[in-house]
Image 1: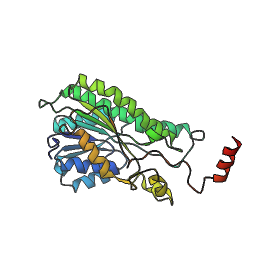
Image 2 (image 1 turned 135 degrees about the horizontal axis):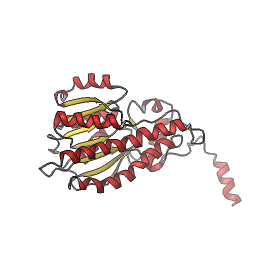
Image 3 (image 1 turned 180 degrees about the horizontal axis):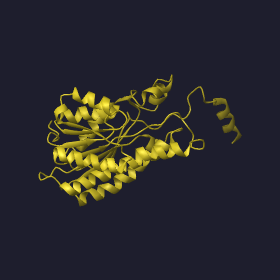
Image 4 (image 1 turned 60 degrees about the vertical axis):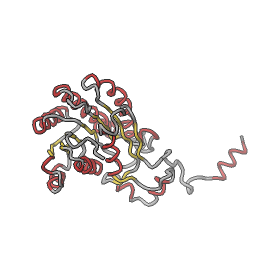
Length: 282
């Protein structure tokens, strides 16, 4: 099926990460022109892009999502190269390690996580909407699309990562606000959010290597498997498509195998006798 993305210009932040590269591959395969933003791993990203079949349709840019000047410059370069940006994906993010309870967490870590995951997403969206205001909507009625990469941590919380859950939860309010604002610039413009669960990426691999973690992760999921980065990317492409999702905006799509929450106690941590004794006392 033709998703209507072959003539679209797609900007992706955090393109050097696992989900970012999968997004580049999926949209590149659809024929989209790509603006790929990276920060810490820009050179490896450029080398990887040079080997891809979409290399001639791709522009790799330094993109620190927490820097308003850098964000403005990235959109300006994208428009200079391709004429406009049709789809923006605020994908850049960080999941800090190690686990830390909020009471022990440094203000520096809390601030940094919010800066990258929430403010960075807001600045990416701000740059996109400003660019759309300058270029105007497309003539073919294919509305602009703004997408955010969230997390199931926003929905279920995540012990030891309240900073991350807080930042990702903020994206929901942002989406609900921007779905109204984007139509002032493009009457067919849409804004949506994808919430991945545990996904096998470079960022997640250290945690997933800890014995027992995978078993606990899938213990609340009907589909007992971990997501691949491509699973997230194909859902993003579906939401960006003016063919498949022309009437979908303000939605939160969870891609997590039916996850219903994180297991609070593992069997070896749960003292069943103590629970039973307390029940009898009551």
